[in-house]
Length: 558
Image 1 (cartoon, helix red, strand yellow):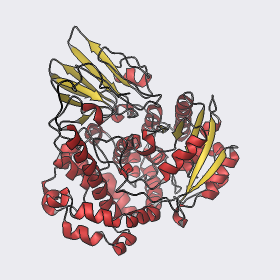
Image 2 (image 1 turned 90 degrees about the vertical axis):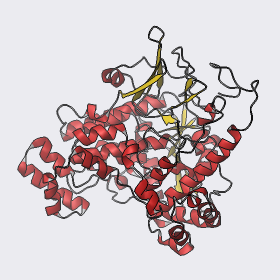
Image 3 (image 1 turned 90 degrees about the horizontal axis):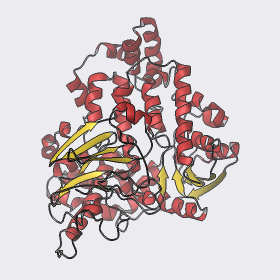
Image 4 (image 1 turned 135 degrees about the vertical axis):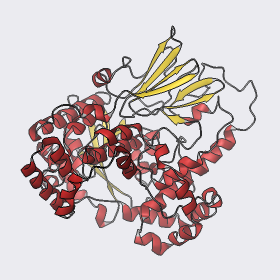
């Protein structure tokens, strides 16, 4: 059996992991229980070989920083980070999993084990997989629901725990680099990150990059300048006015085993990477993860969480009032949620209720969302309160940020908030504490108040890149019409060609109506084109002399 992970040559976080249990690049003691994992965190794929039992066990840390996929080929179980690494061993059986792609069209937010290739599965973050005498078994070693036990913290306790976790995570990542480039949008997350980096134990050289798209909705220069000035950081503003991605000529550096929204680059990656190289930055750092871990979209159901955790009726009424004010949901409806007691199966079904009007009725009705549910969600539907269940689904979605595509294929990309200490501090915080009154993300504002300029602390708006994104799709419209209307999904009847044709017009794009439905179609089709090109290359004739020996990584792997 050969087990190995591959990453780019410049990546300080991963290397080959061989079946004798060595892990080059990252070290971690083998974890067997949740307590072990809680004490060992970072970015790792640990390998434990037990010759006497004839087994090899692979564990992936809960952040998902290092990709890990497995497939069976030539009587070998192969674990790798890049799908191309399977090609030398698996020269047949590269079938497209059309059921999975249809599900992606309906709901791409929470990927589980299955991928776009039949027989290629992901080892999920926090998951352990054991290969023993031809059998494969899985179990979750780290689960969000394990963190929810025990007494809920008070507001000051939650604030202290979140700040400590953020500082710990930033200190870990910065210890590996002497120079960093930061995406500084000027929002709460990136502004807090520049403050945390400026106070890190080993403060790296830092250059901040702010993307200027040219539309009022995304002009955050005022906030980015204030944040950089407060901490004495260098700020470079990048204009994306003329940065329009060409989807026809843009291809992934590494084929991902499933579609990713990062296929739809808007130009920032290329420009930012060039500036980072010019500034001698060794890695990119972002504030991604803040929306989920500080619960930007805390739901009205947080009042229900409060009642079920505390039993305090007066406090519940107060919490429900503020939840109604914050979300705009009528107070009677907020109150009625406390008496809604759906079964675990019903709660799970509500979380997996994606839809897409561009998918044909036949394909939509044939899709079974429950076949693609994430194991974390199954247990959370049975044990977590309503608002916390929603947050867990959002944390599952975070894993997509570590897709090694775009600039992340050329330079390390670090998201310190997406780390185990932050996961656990956030999960232990009751949903109603993130916004206890009518100020969204009040807890985060208090946690990082000393690191944020006043303009950011009091900011209530959130920028977007929708306008620039629509411009990019307009520029690519002839290509998109060709690949979608005449592509494999339309030919197979997965997409409703008539509805798709109506949506692929300039007026329809500019209206931004149901834009994400079209985005899902585009990313799946772009991935499908790359995947089919890859399969044609892999399944061509190969001589025995070209086939690598078991246990030896193919020539050219790094």
